[in-house]
Image (cartoon, rainbow, N blue to C red; front, top):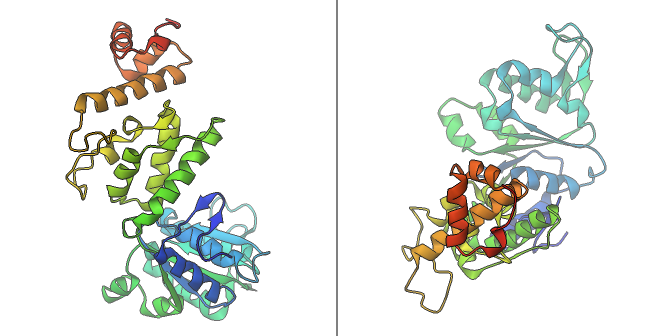
Length: 335
């Protein structure tokens, strides 16, 4: 495994010093069976790192089972994790193994462990201590051989101090802590990620990958990315779905990123470098309008009436805007 970067399921994690340190640490802990607690903001890639630990370990040929505890209700989480026996509750028409059993010999990743209710925490602690599960509605103890990795978006130590998380469970989970930095603290990874995601989503559309203009990269570099890598990926996917330029320009960038009101630099980003102190608002708006019109026409297969409906304007207004913007190649087409 290279320490500079890591690619899994076509997702590049990064090459920054912070992430290289994470990769190096993962290599050290991979073959341990001790519990790992991966912490970091939403979208930093906790499941990706958990999977990397699994794939780097001697358990790599066995299952990797990921569970998001945040989406499971208190009444469902026990059945999902530990399974249930037939007749345990209404609708339980057959025996069903839980996620711990499905991960036998491999790794289970419990994401959003901070959302697990207190009533469930004691049962989870018992499983970690005894390495056996008992299905809901059953009495048989089933041995499980799994490595447990958990993920948390909140400080479990603080939750413990507030009485919202069991202290004994915290210490059981936090044997090996791994913290993932937010994207704003490793901005040198942004160009690598942007290049990867833009190419990936254009190719998924069956189109040649686009290069990204310097101005667009500047906008991405100054945005704080509160949703981290996941938000960045979503922005790149949106660009691939709407951009019709040969090079991704500012008009292709989501408004939320381009005009972020708390941007670290107060200096507007100009597409042209001829006069970096001047920015043409009219040109930027024209870029945006052009891309929206091209997107609507593509989505409507060239039908201008449908495209106008998508843009919530009149058919005649669309025709006028096409002429005003000088989009000669778009003037012909269906009604």
